[in-house]
Amino acid sequence: MIRIANGQGFWGDSIDAPLEQVRRGPIDYLTLDYLAEVTMSILEKQRSRDPRAGYARDFVDLIDRLLPELAENNIRVVANAGGLNPEGCRAAILASAGRHGLNVKVAAITGDDISGRLDELGAKGVEFRNLDTGEALATIRPRVRSANAYLGAFPIAAALDAGAQIVVTGRCADAALALGPMIHEFGWRPDNWDRLAAGVVGGHAIECGAQVTGGNCQDDWETIPNLSDIGYPILEVDADASMVVTKHAGTGGRVTVAGVTEQLLYELGDPRAYLTPDCVADFTTVQLAQDGPDRVRISGVRGAPATAYYKVSISYSAGFKALGQLAYTWPGAYRKAQAGACILRERIDRLGLRFDAVRAEYLGVSACHGIPAAEPSPELADQLPEVVLRFGVRGPDRAAVERFTKEIAPLVLNGPPSVTGLGGGRPKVEEVVAYWPALAPKSDVRAEVTL
Image (tube, rainbow, N blue to C red; front, side, top):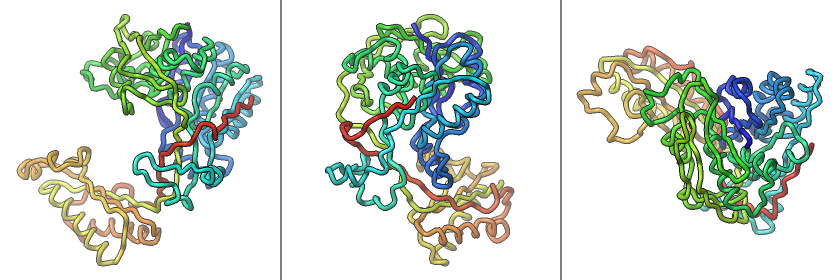
């Protein structure tokens, strides 16, 4: 049996959780998930300013703090912190190991970056059509910034087979971070569909960190104990693919069937065909059972052969945006905020500014739901003590967006009364890097492991 602990659900998650996973009990592997689609866009912005960037620098700082303990306890680390620059991330880790006087084997997994091959693959007939809209990549090709395939778990297993103590990947499937160690430890073959599918389910259960141990949980959340010291998940796995989701003893939060069920439904899509690079998992076959306090057993998972394609995450330049906000107070806070938004729209029109999108949200009224049915009655709305107007624009012309930013602050004196806050001062113009999901044949993408 191996114990795989996840200490990071996204880039920006608790910086102390990985340390607690290492220090509060025995584990064999520490997995850290840094990448979301928006993260790839952020990393692309960073790399465009500095070619040496493009990876999660927080990961390097974390490893620098943990290296002696990882070495002492023989804990191996698998992380997708490499982002758009796995080799740069590996070099930074090796430099850290040198400062500690430690010999550490670090593997970088590359090959997911196909940015420089889009035209070559396009000439072969790969259209990279948007999975949401069906549009061909040709409609945005000049604006593409990056393109990365979601690799699977077998390159991670190969790196561990070669003796890597730390494995740094670029874009890969989230569950692959946990599935890779299982393949390495138990020798599962590429056609062991049921076991691979079980590993995918287990990896999916822990990939979002504390979301499976009581965080962001809808199940009677007020009774969840000690969320201030919430324990992050650990997956206990046997060679036959039986597994248990748990956490370190004495930590806050809780592990229940209801909580694990919520996490398994996260970003699920078709429950009968959860597509991954390594297999297709049937989530309708998953059996969950409480196996004691803070222990949920996963069993019965069935799998099927993987498809012939990798999913590809493409980022592209999509113009500029700016977002500002004002806080209005009672009486009539909601009506004041609405009037402020109306004034801004009229001034935008009078100035002749043209945008792809103009948005107004009213925080404290219906901003989260965004539907008329969620709005309070006029009588109740008139009693609201404060409402924040959040107003933004997006468009291809940076100068137009910049001009808009100069219209927020004047509303303090030349608009509706009782403005109590100008959030963040004048809005900043930001470049928009958008997301384009597509497919690429696996035969055209080759993962490489460098130790």
